Image (cartoon, chains in turn blue, orange):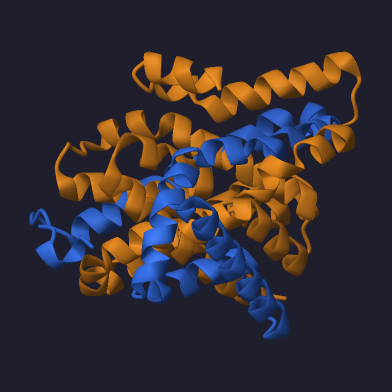
Length: 123
Length: 216
């Protein structure tokens, strides 16, 4: 049952990540630490095979997982009423500024070469 | 998930983003029916719980591309700093200039990282964690909804390099929701979005509190 194994592997890594994050007082959350751990862990073929079956599914539906957090906006309707427009302006402008700055920076750093995929990349 | 099918049917038009539609519908439904958010959230725990393993799973596309990533590492790091830095800085100064309360300003600054991390950073710098989470989600949606048009305006094309640039910018500033959009549209973009998201988490968690401790 590779899917279950894969999913369990992700959960185990997440848990290890959480433990590390808390005990070492890392500034980022457990799941991100788990992500950092997953990368070297994938050099181990059994892990690779099992996660291969579950990761694409999770990532394809990543959007859905944010819905519960997003609906949390209803708890702050008061603030939205009083400062809603200003908040939206700040969020939109800052987001655009950030995305443009990031893209410009990368475009400048990667002048005209379209980076070829090294054949050794594919597992 | 019919919003997903509507989205695919509309050729993945950004405004038909499933997250946006779902959140809007659910929030309205909660308001109209008078159901408390806590009640809804306890029912949605299973979906929310999957967010953890999914974030871990973002390591997979990174591993597949490890050769490229090691080659380009410093460029990506720099771009992540620039993008995240500009987003945080512009958010902070604009919010302050628009006369928003100090704790709200401090909740807006970390909005470029994924929601749970934004909450943590906000708490560290004197913001309101719950608000920071909401701002982060809205940022993600804004980024995901407008990316296509923004990048077209910038003149980014369909080349592999440009897809990576788009993905990375989306992941850096619009974090998980931006990455989700990138993954759906293009494989390269998706992978780089995951990397952007991860890098930004690390950089922002460390640099934002650091930057804010100087003038104080």
